[in-house]
Length: 304
Image (cartoon, rainbow, N blue to C red; front, top):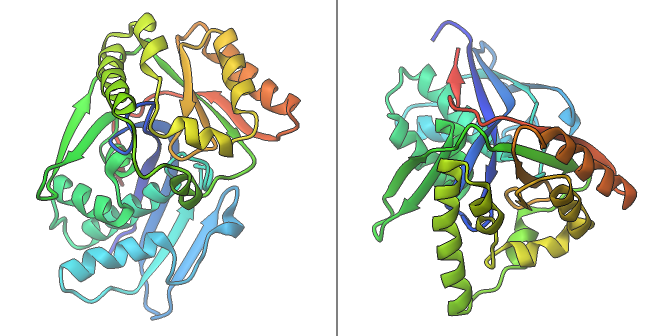
């Protein structure tokens, strides 16, 4: 490996209402990761972009950890490397920043090693590192993805249609919700009625996303598995959601573990929905990092 490798990885929104831990989509915000051969044995990691001071630059860095894991699976020594990280995805906000790091590190190492692993194998490795597939799979493959495992732990990946008329709108507050805390508030058991409700809503959501049927979307984003519990960790949730609906959104849900909120709208209302969500949080005394209409990234992670 003599030349620089650059990997671009999209942000993701996971769960999307009733699709807890299995459904996700790639969004048009990106982190970029560069890998260069190093002559020195000490690891060098340079980070640029907002929140760069919060990214570790030692061997605990998640990009480097994923990079190392691939070489360990090849039973090869980890080569000396210089890593550059360009941040475009906010950290710890429910937009898959950790998944971009995992996918970026794995793809950089795979390219470095001559591409010994297939995309499906990389998806399985990334899922093993992350613990669940709903962020890493769309980050790797792009588009909207459903991922599930069988009784033997084998992953099945299913790309899903996302109608062009449905615009994802994200409102990103300045505060954070830790993934560990977002997991902790979930119950250990659920009522049968709640599970049945989610199965029905997920089936409806998949058809709504494929067809662009707004009436279906208004119902389909309903969830009883994670949103009712996690919304307690997000100040202003009800006000922001109500503002989005009033501005024309089909529905609102939590992006990933939060606190970013995801609204789905048509193109005519998307900008107004973003503005209304930001205004509602601002009126609640909460700083908003960004509120914007995005697009679904269809390419996933790319290597240059």
